[in-house]
Length: 112
Image (cartoon, rainbow, N blue to C red; front, side, top):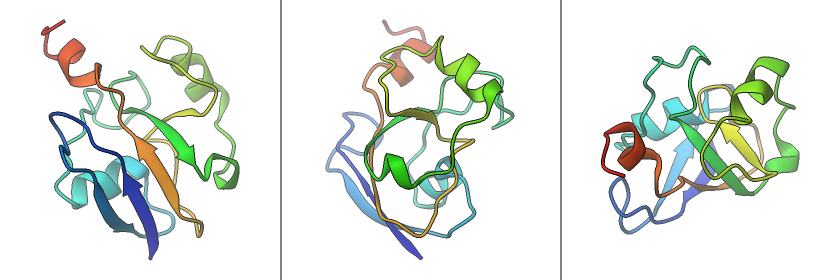
């Protein structure tokens, strides 16, 4: 199991969390399995950006994003150089520090 540190998110994880993820499982699935209800409007098929996360530590230890993910990330709100779609990025052997951008759920639910 790999340690995933999730930074506080006002709606999804107000106090932050330290969870365990199974290598080979998507970050999205690891979050969902640990009661962090990240949005995934396309049902994790790499067709939207609602599961966008920023990898604050450990980004360089993840497998490189494929072209389809890179193309979608260009449309993500709050894109940063270390952004990934959590449905596509797989947990590896190295710990990760993950930030869920604050606007994701508000935008997807029309609260902006």
